[in-house]
Length: 101
View 1 (cartoon, one colour):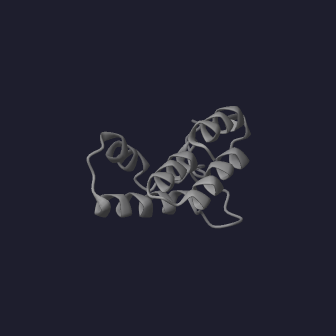
View 2: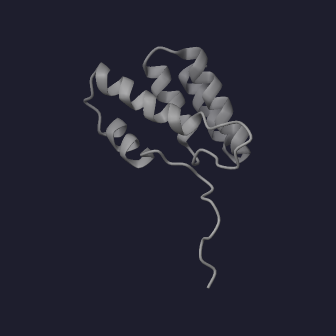
């Protein structure tokens, strides 16, 4: 009776598959670039869109960026996670402190 007629709130772009690949480990530079591209599609949604990245996606993307050596963009996406999901602030702040950001 109350079916989902509206648009989805989140855009996943293979988020589950990407996260699994990342946490499974053992991937090379080619896989890292592929993963970054997938996370970028999730985290860089069009401005003004009502669709948001799923909770944790920007933080996951930030961590992958940090591991690939892009500290500046990494910090930017940790901050974006907090901007979109303010309830994550305590966790993200502690994580950034632990990572030296």
